[in-house]
Image (cartoon, rainbow, N blue to C red; front, side, top):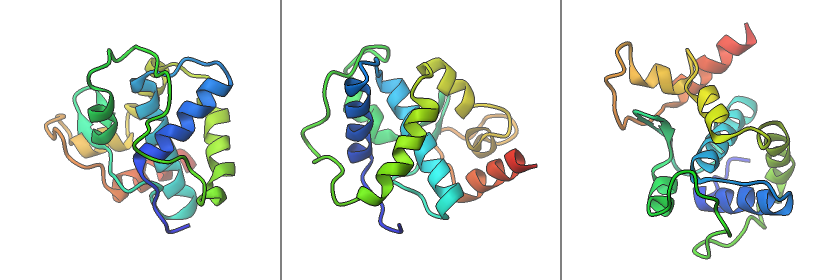
Length: 154
């Protein structure tokens, strides 16, 4: 599973899931779901899932491509349909069971609840920010994600 997929393809998959289950999906919630999928994939499979790294922003971890895709929408507005810029996940069918698990665990939470998970003490976002939260727009590195999951296992 070393092939990375695009952030937007993963977004489209989550948008389709939300639409199929008639659950509201906001840009903020989508951002957190994709980040959690990426981090859990690194933890379980040893490699990131997407071709983009989350960054440390003041509000929490952010994938810049999601921010740019939806920046003209209010952060709490509902995403109506998948982006037409990217085709849906097809050839990467081996990751679908993994994504379904992520959706089943985290899809029920609100954007705010997911945000609290992604900004918890010792989270990759907290670690990448440094002791005083001074690192703005820094990429969240593999080491930060691995260290976080190590603390969860203890």
